[in-house]
Amino acid sequence: MTDGRGTIRLGERPLVMCDVDDVVLEFVTPFQAFLESRGHRLLSRSFRLHGNIIDKKAETMVDDRSVSGLIDSFFAAQEAWQKPFVGVPETLQRLAKEADLVFLTAMPPRHAKARRQLLERFGLNYPLIALEEPKGPVVQRLHNDRPLPVAFVDDMVHNLHSVGEHVPDSLLIHLPPSVAIHKFAPVAAGHVHRVQNWTEAETLIIAHILS
Ligand SMILES: [Mg+2]
Image (cartoon, rainbow, N blue to C red; front, side):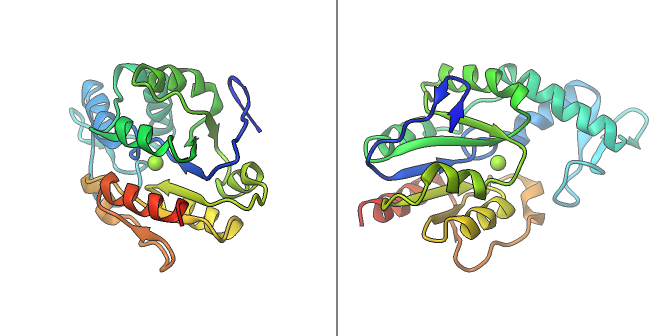
């Protein structure tokens, strides 16, 4: 498989695949600031962006097409808005001593270059796959049944379930950010480990990949 820089070459060691938005880089919090800067506001009423963004002045709902446009504009301007959660670059550096790290980010590939530049600014120089299709088949293709442990970290339950279906032996870690809208997120199935922070995630990953 390739990322923007060429073929992703895995070593003979465990694989840790990791989502980016709201797992490595803050997403909802800077997206809210971006919306405010444009005269909008995100209401935390259900677990979706569409249907929950209002125009502050007119007090009207922003239509779905415009919401999609706002998300796209945010991704295009992400370098001015997003940054990693505190301590995450250091945690990933420690994990990278024991495993190959690959980022799997759900966004249109046209924004991958901006994302790559943003990640590199914080020393997060790991391979990056930007995709809009389900994550499970991509993890399966990359891992390719090697007899080595796999761990996957994401804040979205459907991604964790997708990877669980395609790579059943993988360690699945649900790491939701502490933002209001995630209170409405669906609950993950029993085989998914829900953690509060990266310290807990790191402990589980190390136990899994060194077992
Ligand atoms: Mg995410």
